[in-house]
Image (cartoon, rainbow, N blue to C red; front, side, top):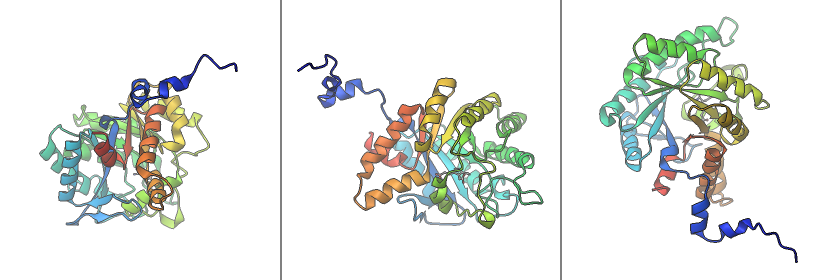
Length: 326
Ligand code: PBG
């Protein structure tokens, strides 16, 4: 028998050999925990479609972040669930809005021990559920929305955010937000731009978590990207970089591994991926039925996202992975 001289299996024989040659090592430092904070509740409220995820009260949020800090998780990203919604999404920029209050609580309690990222969008706060302001025809008005994002950024910075993460996919949002932050002296606040963000069916459970329903059965296809496109994502990434983004994010994660891989080869700034609510929910649903080993699949998926090129991953598995990666 003519056997090949190259035998890759030699290096797979023992666990120690496999550890030695591993190309990707997922660590606690790679994880960002998305957290929801809801106005006007005293006890956390579970999110049915995201097992293990809750809408936090002010105090349960501080407890949760304390536990994440103890586990070594370097960053959290906050989403607000306001008590009141209106056409302009006023709560997003109100100094006493739910996320601003939470940012101040967390900054007071944890100082610089944890990176506080604030998702910067208004969809959680608008009564129509869109990420922007609507014009007279019910369409999202790009440039009017930019002025609102500037107000939100300034409020988040004043409340103690380290990082603003604009997720609304308006053209020019990074430039306007950078300008607004600089104008108020918040030159140290970074921008993590959701640069390539697809109009995905995988955000469903998130919308349960933030009580968002898009008006008139609408969708976000006029501002989020078509999953058919990849070159368009590269354009978006380059634009956000040119507009002053400090780090770039791609979303969802598993359906964008090609985007991550190509992005990694063209940009030098930190690159993030968002393993989104639907990706998390699918793993849980299959695991609940005993069809897959949920813990093993979670580790495999998030490792693959890092392998594809992400420097860090926003994931609802952050806490459970951090517990296992100690
Ligand atoms: C918009 C925003 C969304 C998510 C993060 N930021 C929802 C959307 O675009 O409809 C989705 C995250 C997830 O599904 O986990 N503020």
